Each structure stands twice: as C-alpha cells, then as structure tokens.
Image (tube, rainbow, N blue to C red; front, side, top):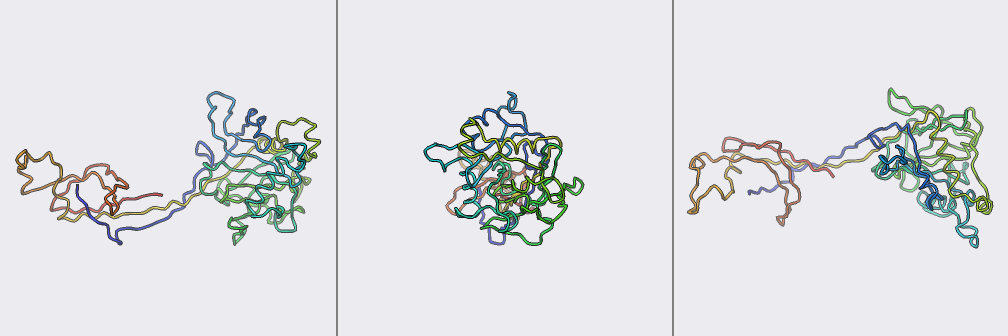
Length: 354
C-alpha cells in the first residue's frame, strides 16, 4: 500500500441544491389520501391525524409511511375535551396552539398572524410534513393544495413567486398562502391575486420547518373573490366536547375531508443542500509503480516475476482517504482497474457527499 499527501490545491468544496419529489414513490403530486381509524381513535388522535398515500387497512400497506399530519389548535382550548376536568384550561387543542406558537414566534403570548398584526387568529390548522419526506426544507413556489367543502372549492399556493424579498419570523422563512392554481406545464404555482381576505391570508408556509399553517378564519368565509369555502369548524367548549364523548379531534377529520374530497391534489417538492468535497488524486509517472503485495516474492526475497524488475506495473483499483493518524476514513472504488507504469500518469477525482 502506498501513500501520498493531498495539498490544499487538490481539494475543492462545492454545494448544490437538490430538489426532489416530496411523497413516497417519488411523486410530487399527491392525489390519494387515507387515514387510520386505529390511530385516529387512539390517544394521539386527540392531537393529530396521520395521512397516508396508500390504504393502510390493507395488509400489503400495513407498514406504509405517513406523509403528513393534520392538527387543529385553538388558543382557548375549544374543540377538544379537558385532559382532566379538575384542570379546565388544559386541552389538546390549546396545547397544539401553544406548541406551534412557541416554535414559530418564540414566546407564549403572540397570537398567530396571517398577513400582519391586523390579521390574528384564535385557531390554526397545522399540516406537518413527515420529517423524512421534506429533508432540509420544501421548495417554495411549487406548493399547491386543493380544498373542497361541498360545492365550494379553492386552490392554495404560496406567494414566493410574487414577492421579491423573503420574510422571516425568528430564523425561519415564512411565505403567505394565497388562492391560485398550479401550472402543470411550467410546474409552478400561480397566485390568482396577491391580496388578502378580510381575515388575512389563507395561511403561512414555513418551508425550513416542514410546516403549512392554515387560517381557519379565512377558510370559513363564504365562497367568492377573496373568499373561503364556507368551512365550519367545531369550537365546542371543552365541557361540551367532553359531554359529546368524542374519541378524536373532529376538526382534524373536517380538514382531512376538505383535502381528500373530489379532485384532490397536494403538490410539494423537497429541497436540500448537498455539500461535496472533491479530492483530485494526482498520480505522477514516477509514483505507485511498484506493488506492495507480498505474494510476488519467494521465501528468499526474490521476485517471482522477473519482468517486473525492468518494467514494473501495477493496477490501481482503490483510493483510500486517511487522516494524519493513518486512520482510514473513506474508500473510493474504481469501476475497473487502471494500469500504471513509468510511462503513465493518472488524475482521479474522488467525490465525498455530506
């Protein structure tokens, strides 16, 4: 085995943004939606609803991966029963609202805002994309979600294609959700208007957190220009909800039905920055011409193959990357052995992705 040290000029660092389909099966346009009654009626169903691409009730899909979850939050705790009737201000919906408020705004007092401080909302709908699916973030400008309530229907897109600067809440990029459509030809979402409803935007997307937060107040508006879909959400008081013996969060099911109704469509693509370090391995004509394989000599130390005395030749098959302590860190295999002798020089490019 022979070694050679890399110089500074032999190394190059590069970064590329990789955009890929979001959903299982390498698809960007999700048109089938299924839920699990077992999950919905379990203890987790009081908080969120898992949504799948395949029918999880079939044995062949028993291990299907959840694509995203739906969770309804309410600042007053309405729409869910108490955890304990003796502690009346603690409910799942209140926890959902507080959890995502702390995550996004970094405090426990700021209400959710959709389009500015003039448009606050007492409740939210959180669509959280499976972490393994969105990787580093999802790609703004390609988001499209179709919602349908009876005969009322609306397409939702983000405003990244009509804004010139990114807005940040804390350290997270935030884009407002508008009504619009998806151009299958150019593969971009197209807002129909940059204006908000009287209740603000239809929501926000936070691509670096994998979150889409919808504004129930905007969706509750009557159908029309800058209107909603006439959505009606369950805002029973916690005591009423407890008396109704609900085993799950009814609002999660309501939103699921909006998404999975006729003409369902949910378009997203994941995005991640892939960093690569290139090592240019330069093999000069005078280097690596003698093998270190001990099987080419006899017990007296003589070469078994005398032609190697005057015409040494090796076959390079592998490049190993070592640290200064001699520890092997990475191995690059060539697709075929490369012959090396005093008449040849080689330049091998080794790429490490991380």
